[in-house]
Figure (cartoon, rainbow, N blue to C red):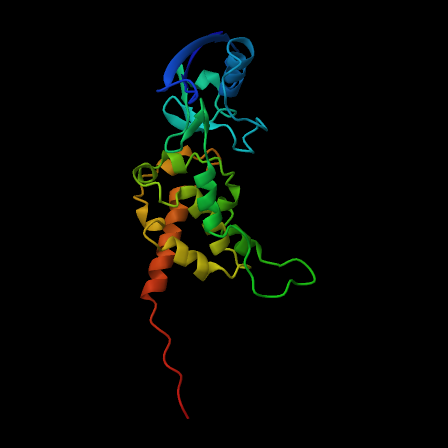
Length: 242
């Protein structure tokens, strides 16, 4: 089938403003948007720039806007889209070139929530055990592949780039609710700041954008509830004196 695809192009070394360019390629209905981009790059314009790696929805490198929605190009089938297909870079990040965005700030926020196991205890001789129920508690947020689709679909992030963003909160959730981790208070203090979870307005864009099906809004809500519960917990009584 003949496919019309419009791509928002921008080369900061040559262009003052982004420009839409249209290409016609031949593909099968079961091909993916990534195949269309390859067809453009390999047969029409070798200067087209975009990220991709595994092509199986695991690495998260080919996140972009497809027909106005954040998606992974390697997962979206041509047959499921109206023509012309319109592809542009994710919003809210500086554009390096064409569909490639600068994600340095995104990963700075990811690192800010301490996305690793924190424990003051000496490592055990075997693995740190937990029950199936304890593992299930944070199962959903282990699926994050850091593609950035949730964060760049968020109006709160568009309005204020200081917002830590949905992806970082998802990563914090994964460890906050891990029974083996002891860094809950540290991460809670980070997320309880003005740029933390309270900037979320529960719009659900992030949940819709997630290519891994994570209920991002639910995870953010659970972190909010945890912070509220900690704030309303009565203080410890003073120690009694003999």
